[in-house]
Amino acid sequence: MLARAFLIAAFAASPALADGGGLNNSSSSFPTLTRADRAAIVDDLVERLRSNPEILVEALLRFRQAEREDGALGLAPADAPTTGPTGAQVTVVEFVDYACEPCRSAGLVLDGLAASGEIRVVHRDLPLSADSIELAATALGAHKGAGRYAEFRTALLAGRPGPAAYADGRPFALAAMKRTRSDAARLGVKTLPAAAVIRDGRMEILAGEITAQGVRDAVRRLGGEG
Image (tube, rainbow, N blue to C red; front, side, top):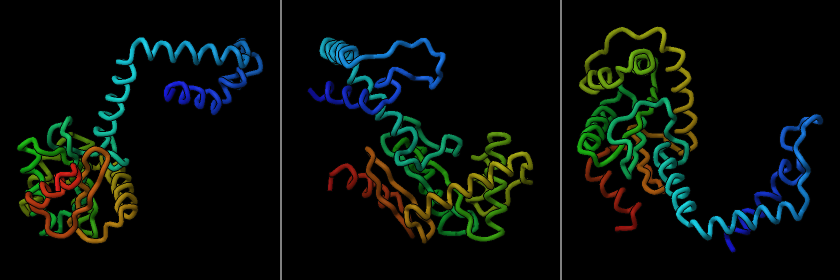
C-alpha cells in the first residue's frame, strides 16, 4: 500500500508523466498517457516490488550510504579534504582556524580518532583573521592544486608555517571558505574550535574544548546509548 501510494503521488506530481510531455518540445513524439495507462504502470511497478522486495531494500541502503558519504545535512562538500575511513558510521565536520591554539589541539584529537578508524573527519577551514585566512588559503590551495592538504595540516597543527601558497588553488580556497562561513552561520557556530558530530542523520555540535572522550560521548548520545 505504501509503495503504491508513493508511486501514485510521484506520477501526480510530475507534469511530464501526467501530461505525457517530458521534454517540453512540441515536436516530441512521446505518446500521451491516459489515466488508465498511468494506473497500469503503477500496478506493474507495485507488483515488481512485491515480487522483488530486495530492490527497495537495496535502494534504501544506497540512500543511507550516500547520506553518510556526504556527511549528512549538506555539511561535507565533495571537494572538502577528509581523513579517516570513508565508510565510517560517524562523520565529524571540523571547523578550524589554524591560527587558534585550541583549534590546533582539537585538530590533533580528531586526527587521532580518524587514524584509529572511529570517525571520518571533514575539514572545514573557518579563519577569523587576515593571517589565518592566508594559512587556510595555503592549505586549501595545496589540497586542490596538489592533493597535499594533509602535509600542510600536519605542519599547521604543530604551529609551523606551511610552504608557499599554491596560486592555482587560491580561487578554490576562497570559494570553499565562503561556503564554510555560510554553513557555520547556519549551525549557529560562534566559538572555535567547533565540530558537528553526525551519526545516522542526527547531529550534535561541540564547541570550545574538544576531547576524544567528548566526541565519544556525543556519538553515544546520538546513538541513543545515554
